[in-house]
Image 1: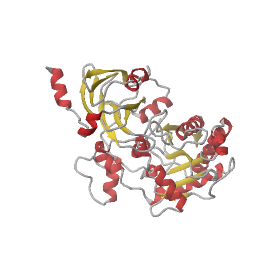
Image 2: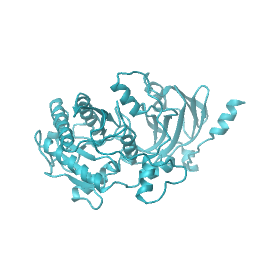
Image 3: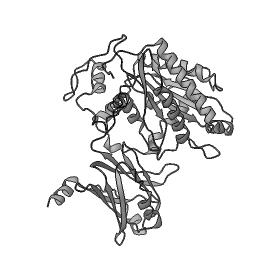
Image 4: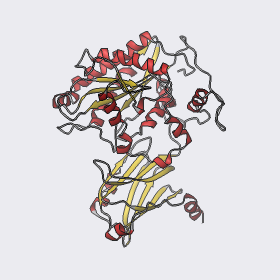
Length: 436
């Protein structure tokens, strides 16, 4: 009786498929599993849109899915072996032919989750996708984890606090009106000064990931892979450094091969109260001739060049390729998508970008001698100096080889580290209550 009530409360999600398509049947062409602490994703790719009904069962936690209009095929059977033992959320997947034309999928879970099930329309390089995003109901708090690491503590960090909404308050202040009903009062604005010892946090954002490979070089190098390696090398340097006696810590928006939507990357940086945000990418162009690194900051107006405008449009398309559930965006996400970046943030971003560009120029060729600006969605944190670094042109075979070189990755990480230190030398971080 309790289980039935849980099923009724959970409800079902129906993804419609035309009768003609159902009659002919759909074929699964690929299956993928993307495990991560943030969430685990299961993707079924098919030649036509699928119809599915899903129900979440609480005890033991599992997601049962009936997919109509298909027969069990070898691609679907591969799902069972694709679940890794260290997947934080999925214990296993069972799949079988439940009835003629109906395949039942059961995802056994390691903890309570909030499932999101949605479809994605075809976009190069994918056909139709049916996506299961499995979010833990009690996600870890990344800021608490960073502080615990600094103190030498072990164990899972507590769930994030939900009693403040600084972004919502910022938007309210920007509009010169009181916070919207239900939002808490404004937190105290930090004052400049030396302050007490605290973590200085640099958010590192390796671009793309998971379903979104980013640009792919002629020899098969994937952007998502090389930028993660560069970010990890930079993280190690940051974690071994300090500024004016303050401890530095790096926070990666993704430390594995999974997709993070653009607005979530911004939210993650704000959740850990990052002092800087550095997004790392690798250029691609129509021809193999362009070369050199670039640094971009946000623009309130138009792009600083047609190339910068093209680059922003390309990077902003990541959500379409990586795949986001547009129906799941709540009010807070909608607020986060607003462009609340201030002139002060852009000014600081240009300073940071200039320092980084100068250091990058010491280890490699620059594509442009100045920081460019365009409307990059990932740079829209309203209170964090944010830049996007294009490390090299992965579409250039010579630079593709350089990106795969451990020597160049180390040189670039060292240059970015010097740039960060140089920025803080001229722009001391704000005093805050975040102490260690």
